[in-house]
Image (cartoon, rainbow, N blue to C red):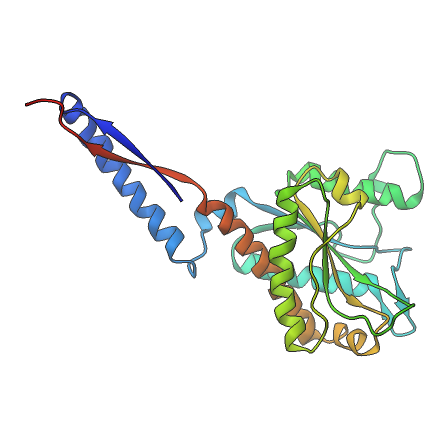
Length: 258
């Protein structure tokens, strides 16, 4: 938090007394809201922040899958849990899809079905004037089935997206450690949705379908709940850190008269 000192002469004393009182009241409210971290800022955070939750794939596009595991279903299940956690905090959020369907029909752009589907998701981001984008996916590494762990990707030219990715990754790594899965650093990714989204955003790869143990974990309700809570904790921390950088003015009355 930055503090600026304002110098006010006695000639302005009467006029400044009222302003001084108001400023100190506001400063007190500021301290109350920012130092008590456990109290979430409903009056500022929730009103100006809209989280776009994008469960990847859907409809004809299943994403990665095995005979008993389909990515699009897990993405949607975790996406809804993230939204419920945000609702509990009274933070507005929008799901790009709430069922098993793709979004290419929402795009007026020509191109492959995949590109039109991504454009459909982007149209929701723009329409809802989202503040942050969170796209949910599941990883695959058939060449090395021993690889595990959630990984957060960000667009390299967006500094705020990188900070968001780092914060979410830290919280996810706590869950990975608890379940004896690999911990990772966030990674750069030149993904269409992040590049064209026009708002800070990340892609969260929840884990690896190619690792049998992690695949079984991802199917479990309790594990999905843990992952969703970690992601929301990362979002909350990121926003509150940004708000701590706000500056306030503290007036000091100094006499220039004898």
